[in-house]
Length: 98
Image 1 (tube, rainbow, N blue to C red):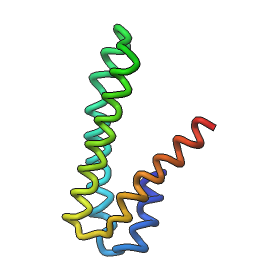
Image 2 (image 1 turned 45 degrees about the vertical axis):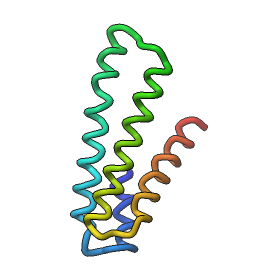
Image 3 (image 1 turned 90 degrees about the horizontal axis):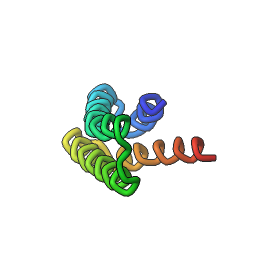
């Protein structure tokens, strides 16, 4: 869903950079998934403190956002691409927790 959403946003911002952007976005998402994997594995064997999990998740999200922002600058795409990236995730969380 996010790929389609971001492709639509990029078609308004920089149509010529859509494929480059989507590749970078998927790389950032893969990095985030890999950073979350160790905690998921540890929690499946021996659950860890909820505050540690929240802190780890927050750190990963923060790093993903900073890396996304950096890549958007390198690709010379408007900063709104990063805002829409976060907006999509917030919309999905709202739908999940609703």
